[in-house]
Amino acid sequence: MLVSAKEMLQKAKAGKYAVGQFNINNLEWTKAVLQTAQEQQSPVILGVSEGAGKYMTGYKTVVGMVNGMMEELGITVPVALHLDHGGYEGCLKCIEAGFSSIMFDGSHYPIEENVAKTKELVAMVKEHGMSLEAEVGSIGGEEDGVIGAGECADPQECKMIADLGVDMLAAGIGNIHGKYPANWKGLSFETLDAVQALTGDMPLVLHGGTGIPEDMIRKAISLGVAKINVNTECQLSFAQATREYIEAGKDQQGKGYDPRKLLAPGFEAIKATVKEKMELFGSVGKANA
Ligand code: 13P
Image (tube, rainbow, N blue to C red; front, side, top):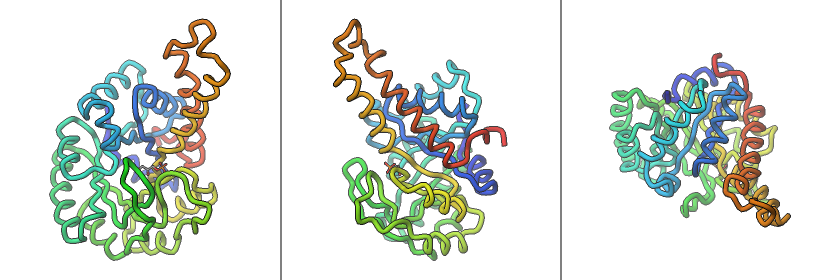
């Protein structure tokens, strides 16, 4: 059964580790993340962007696939199904479809409007036993065609949103989605420290987990980050393994064109990336912690 992300993240924050949010795109992605979480006995969050939800034909399909797969695979570790960067309408749809967690990305609204909409959603998710993530300070980079520059959040605004009763807070600290440019200045630990000082026990979320050096990830966790989002890195691993398979001509040998064979190396590559991240984040073995 899907669970809200609230409890797993509170435990992670208290235990000084982070739970990974791995974005899913299709059946192979979902199966790879769920199986790895079970093998590693790690709690996990399946992230679904609005674009990925649309690609999979809608949120109800996603809920049906994830619930069915968890039952058929005998998944017993805590799993949250989470809308990533949802607009207000998308949040309402996911509440109705049976997600267990949502992110309302109100970072592009003026702070007053972000506050008003977040308040409404706090009340709704409580009613459904779900968790809510809010964002302050836009996370840069490109995701689903939306490009933003890596901002640093205003710690006072973070406190204002945290106090509304959200379960986790994404604060921009110079992080961006996708690959980091060569001239990236790194995470702003000064901002993170200031945000944590004002928001206390609130689990903080680090978006743009792809390509952040390991020492920065560890430091971010030590400063209150309890959820780290990874998307692009699984896509790169999948693409590379699939390319190698085809470049080696394996799709033309025997029944190598069978999608169950053709997609197998990419599937294994996602599993390896997810395992590596779970080890780095410290969530391995924490399923029942
Ligand atoms: P990356 O694609 O950079 O890993 O970021 C993922 C993310 O933050 C999803 O919200």
